[in-house]
Image 1 (cartoon, rainbow, N blue to C red):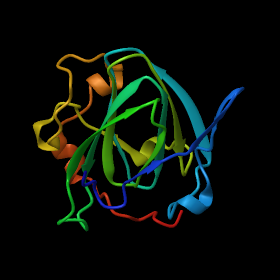
Image 2: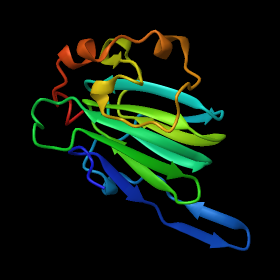
Image 3: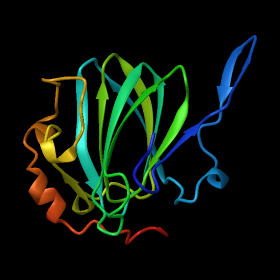
Image 4: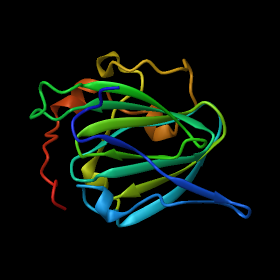
Length: 176
């Protein structure tokens, strides 16, 4: 699958033994991106959709550890005109992977079943760095496997794609 520029999906190696399993989910040396300063554990119910969100400065990291999740990606960076603009990934806890999302790539997470996942961020939450738009905006070019997902109030009230696309989504923080 072709992904937007700088988006990486990295397989993780699990080491099983009689006690269970051990999987390293992050090593600075694996990435050419800023290290996370914050990790969050999240649980999503079936039919929950989080997004569409985009950040100007923040890199995001995602690892689904249980259940299944669809991740929609859409590149808003003007300096990547020939790159793939949109992609839909299907991640699950049976095949651990780390998804690295650079600034300027809009993303949303849809849980088709109960799911548990970790998210990392290269900078702490800053609402001035965060924009969103409706999950079903046709301009995103994303084919979600749902028609009426559960949304937060802020995602339900998100603006349209034109407002999101008009914001300056430059790689200003590639070295944060």
